[in-house]
Amino acid sequence: MGCGLLHHSVSMKVVVFNQTSSPTQDTVQAQLDERTDSCSEPPHLPHAVIINQTHQEVFAADSEVMYQCEDGYTTEQGESRKSVTCISGNWTEGPTCKQSDTAPAIRPVKPDSSPMMIPVSNCGNLPHIPHSAVLPGRITLTYSCAGNYKLFGPKTVVCYNDGTWSETPTCEAEGHCVLDPAQYPKGTFNRDYQAQNVPEGETRYLHCFRDSHVRGVRCSNGILTVARYCCLSQDRDNENCW
Image 1: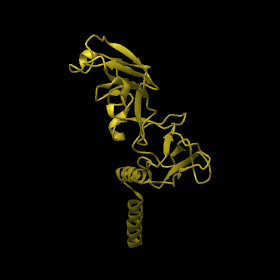
Image 2: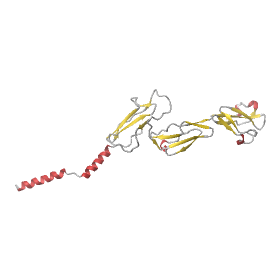
Image 3: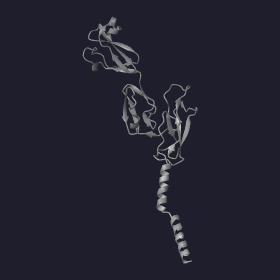
Image 4: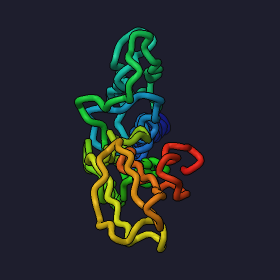
């Protein structure tokens, strides 16, 4: 009888020991499981942007993110949006945005629910706007036009998180060019001429070093072109004078 009781007591101790677990181990394991199920940032997809989502580096399991195709593009199913879900550490398949056959050939415009803006250094070369100067900042580019040009469109340009630029402005001539004979070498124009405006699209002829000779000037798109040669008045329209 004594041996039986001893054996039973040992058995009970073994059972109790095997059922006891360390709280620290459970916590570490739960953290590992959570990390395994979470996802990193959703991938960047051509002609698609993530909408209604603030920036974050880690997404919990079952998180859902919505993509929207750029204007003029649709998914293979003809839809403009498609969501993806974080499952077991991976995102489900995102949309493939293709240009619509019926879409007009215009520059893509960002969706109403504007995508996230990121530093301009992420969009590569700065947009080139003829007759303009640009002041780059960290998030925005600020454009201004040269003297006889007027800015049309947005003054500031931003970089979106899909690597594209927002709408860019243009610099257009305000309707005339300025001719100042004093800025040209002696003999180019008669020194009696004063600075004057040349209307857009107009060609004028001014006397050179002789009254019988003239030199043409043209204003086109706000740029003044001065003829290379001083020609006889009757030959002024000859292209060899230009």
